Length: 201
Image 1: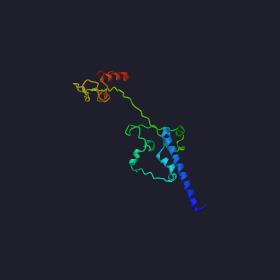
Image 2: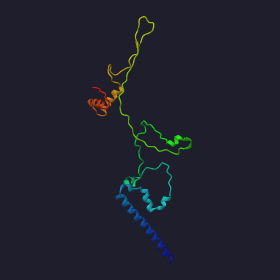
Image 3: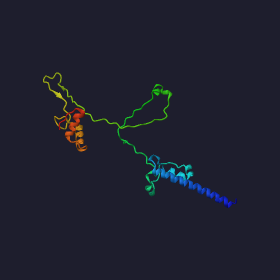
Image 4: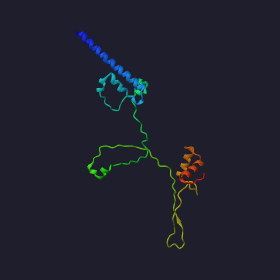
């Protein structure tokens, strides 16, 4: 066999391999597009079908990636990389943490070493509650004074004299009226039904 025939056979073998890889890629794309959504993968994985050598290249992830090119905007959603999931809860929400330690570790803390932790978060709510605020003002008279003079601390400033209204209650009612579109009579029913508090409007 001459050198030309050997070259021809090598070229034919290479073309057959490329043809086989292209067929695999087309079959895979058809399965991805028409199959279930759980079978969809990254576009970078599909590139490995045509260029297996690219799998050996390792790129440094420095976090300074450039914005996607214009042609990437027209790439189907199934071919694009998924964006990182945004946090479900705002970062500035009041937070409490509960640490659960296994009984074995609490029994022998010196025998164990922490190697990591798992976190799970849930959203809790503290429902509105009504509190009775009583202001007590003791009355005094000076000892040994032949003419007693009553002494009592003045009342703190209030919104409406003789009313049970406080600033927080007023804010609660006005927010329900103008922000949550709850008329006064409906708020009265809610307070009576849920808290047993009757506040006529």
